[in-house]
Amino acid sequence: MGRGWRPILVGAAVVAGTFGLAKAQVFEPEAPAGSAVTGGDIYRGEIVFERECASCHGPGAEGGGVGPRLVAAGLDAATVTAAVQQGRGVMPPGLVSGGDEADVVTYVVSLSTP
Amino acid sequence: MLLGDVSETYTDLVTTVFSSTIAAKAWLASAALVLVLVQITTAARIYGRLSFLPERDAAIAAVHRWSGRGAFLLTLPVFFHCVTILGFQTPDTRVAVHSLVGTFFYGAFAAKVLIVRDRSLPGWVLPTAGLTLASMLGVLWLTSSFWYFTTVRFGL
Image (cartoon, rainbow over all chains, first blue to last red; front, side):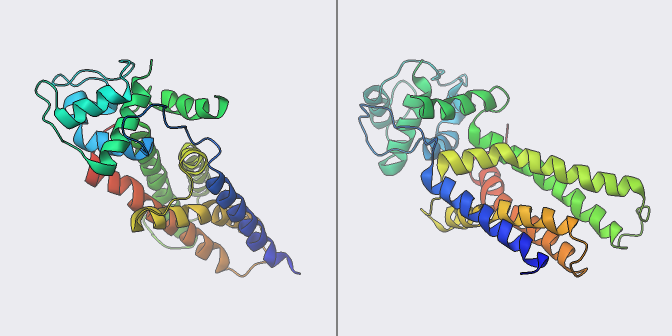
């Protein structure tokens, strides 16, 4: 086999390794226990949060003037779920629902844990 | 748990500068894309195109090399999060395309690095490999950063 194949073989090995790592998801975070809504994905929740919630709660939930800071606020899943579904203060109810709700609750609980 | 802590530590680190991990990745990938555009421009000059730049100047070659190294380094934090924390996912077309191209990206990168050092290969191989790699980064950027800036938010 000539040297010309070396880049292809090494490249293929790197692709296989990357795919194996990606399938293993070795550092995938665990969903917080006790979620009132289950099956949420933290990463997708972050996207939903930035799109739907950050205008009031600030980017990264650091506080945005209208909504309070949620980082390290010690909120549990039941509290966050209730706020999302029923609203709180000026926050209207049902801003997100379904899968987006589960995702955003999981995300908020994860960053809310001190 | 140790493995869970990696994700938290990553988030803690990137949110010292950016508002969220996704924002960090979007901007790091954008910076890498800018450097890849520098790569394409300098490579075009090295191959005798773009006459407004000095021909075969040592500085052009140095800028080409260092922009490539910089682009590679900028993609590493993105790679780490995408591969080890998010993993290969196919919930919709955008994410599926991103996952698929992302899986092949570092393989193409490794091949390109070896091709650069192998002077026995035909002349068309290196520019083809370089453009393929640049195109892959373009697709990755379009299916992540561009989507984020246009669909979610444009900010740090």
